[in-house]
Amino acid sequence: MQSKDKQQSDEDPEASQRRYVMSYTPIIFRDKLSRFKDQWSPKVIAELNDYQFKLAKLEGEFVWHAHQETDEAFIVLEGSLDIQFRDGLVTLKSGEMYVVPKGVEHKPVAIEECKILLVEPKGVVNTGTAGGARTAKNDVWV
Amino acid sequence: MQSKDKQQSDEDPEASQRRYVMSYTPIIFRDKLSRFKDQWSPKVIAELNDYQFKLAKLEGEFVWHAHQETDEAFIVLEGSLDIQFRDGLVTLKSGEMYVVPKGVEHKPVAIEECKILLVEPKGVVNTGTAGGARTAKNDVWV
Image 1 (spheres, chains in turn red, cyan):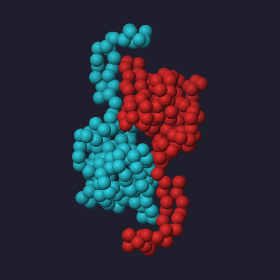
Image 2 (cartoon, chains in turn orange, purple):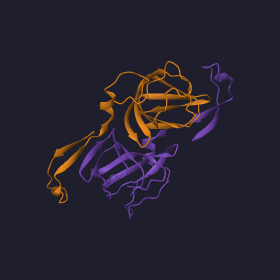
Image 3 (cartoon, helix red, strand yellow):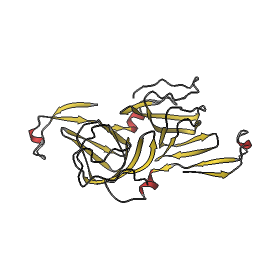
Image 4 (tube, helix red, strand yellow):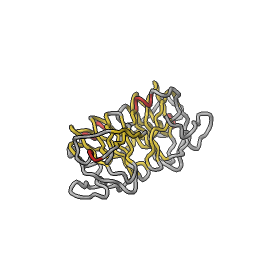
């Protein structure tokens, strides 16, 4: 994500003494989302200590599952997502988030495709302890 | 964030057997941002295990600092943010993020007010090891 470009600056007296300036690359959600089409298959875009940020496209109904070891953060970037709980639900739209507490059964449902950012520890399996055919491969970067 | 509402559902055979349905509340960035005006003073909106999501409004130049114990994630919600490093910079716009690695000196700079979402462990001090007058109080929820 970083490359060395030879560059001079005349704006900053400190910078003029540097021979190399690193080029740092932002992580652009829209660009990353354009690189995959598969749904219910989270793609890693960044790591923060032992946590990962993952983009996912969701449409239809997922399976009931829970993560016994961790909370899970859902941030909706585009569209609308329902997270069903056994006793209710929360509807998230773009610019909204929710943290599902560890151990709580939930089922994501999206009437139309929605695009989300997940934040959770490395190694979390998308189907939790439920397993099954909807289980996605982990640590797939985009 | 949660309240019990007596509610009946005729859509779901399981639900009809429940007497109470929990009401779950989304965390709406725009609403939370409307509740404070102070800049460079991150406000907690959610916790994920021992991590926090914080909203902040930034304008002008911050101080050079580093966090020796943790990476720090910046997600820009509105406006534009430069994160200066000693050897370069990254510019983030709405829908873009960057993770500053632990121990790396950085200085956030925003020409006009920008609104960001920070993700980092509980207890991280905004000025890192630099300290000083710009140090904000921690664990202030909004």
